[in-house]
Length: 358
Image (cartoon, rainbow, N blue to C red; front, side, top):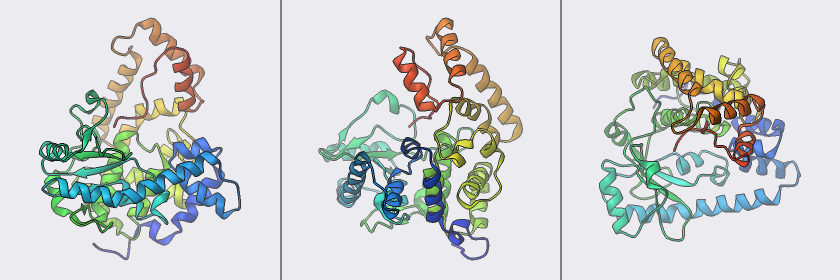
């Protein structure tokens, strides 16, 4: 790994000072929660001598408990199955925070050579299946597992979650690149920082592009001190350079005061404002974000297809209900997405999710 000239901005600037500045200008706690910065906000408020809401104190305790259980759970996982276990995201990101308990997570993501075989081994060892099985058909990981009495989910990955329209790197390549985890858990591997940074960027973009500040903070923290030329080279090799550049530009702007890119002036304005995305921003993101991920011709085709799909009723939905939903969305165009969804649900209608899948 090359470090030195061309290093990431997070190595040269105060990442956590930048996060504090974001917290200071957030409109309300619910926005910080939506962006995953609520635990960092609690730390900030204590430093300033401000009161921390009781609900947030309870959330902190839960996050600290999760951190404490991770080593024992990883040890049990390692003893319960054979083959490499490559830990991604979650605790492997948290170690880059000032205190790992400041980065909440609710699952352990493990990439393995044979997901089905590993899943069967873990079930035989006492791990239990959880969640609606229909939600995990033909996706990047199998149905989650739990260990009785512990709140963490275990997700066994057949492949990383990736940007639609771009082929992911092979799991063999990823597993071969892995090294011992920074957590010190015996027999548990992790991706090297350059690889992990791009996996995080792809995963974030595949959910909802540029949706949460915590994703930008994660990427800046993990990539701190890395040579940007090395990141660009691997992103180019994986066909991910457009996504990586868009993510990097957003991070540089929001965290380090660089010039705002076009997404941050249009459909991702909520990042700089430290608030939840509005209904209109969510729709524009659905239409346009692909232009920052795919070559122009493919992006235009996908945008046209997406627009056509949004203009039609959902499967099983009548035109009357579709029109009612559309009117509600137009009325709430500048309302935060969660507030709009809540109003729709209370009104007895269901709005299609704008938040991405598992």
